[in-house]
Length: 183
Image (cartoon, rainbow, N blue to C red; front, side, top):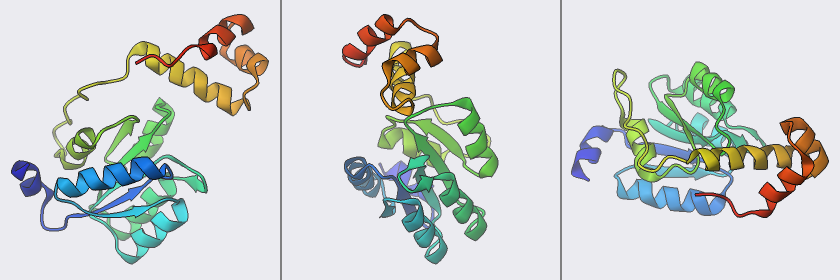
């Protein structure tokens, strides 16, 4: 614990931006225990307002927020504080969004569910070292299930359209959707 606090540095300000209120509260509490001075925002607008008024040394932004894209908050932080270390979180891991996040100035990119330890490791990793791999990465079955769920939601929960876009039989998709999510 003391080791992490020494690595944080003088400015311990951390901005957390996520529209999932329970997750935001849990993460804020966990990051405070690790020595950060946390401010939270539940939207792009609130995140940009805090980033403009008090640019943080560290930030964790969810990619998809109800009022827009978390990358807009990343851009605002980068403009106000170029040395900030920023981690982008998303429930939908995709290479294209990871590349966009890093190009815009994110230090790292993590898929949800990421815990406070993974986030702290990513925030405090030095430029030349990669953070250690997550302790409990998603299984391949879980990643597949998450992808199917995402496409299903994007198709407004239309099974036929989802099956067509995923190039799978409608009944196979129905069976997958009826099961519980894999671990």
